[in-house]
Length: 76
Image (cartoon, rainbow, N blue to C red):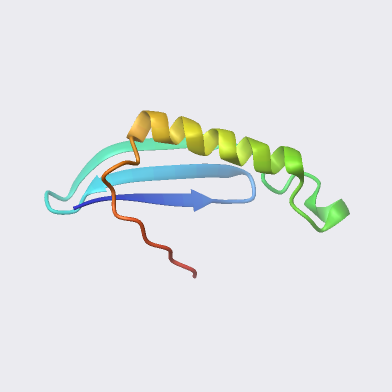
């Protein structure tokens, strides 16, 4: 089973693709997206920040190929 883990923080996004059966890392992705840019002032994530996150997810998909991976949501 292949799994992609995505960590979206206030400044950056990271993705990790793992083959759980073989316990092998298949790829990683990291990009600064400044998610919280302007958050103190507006109390909302801005459209520009959302666009940067979406663009980064598209880049990560191109690099890691999200297809054929198990989808799961975790809220901690």
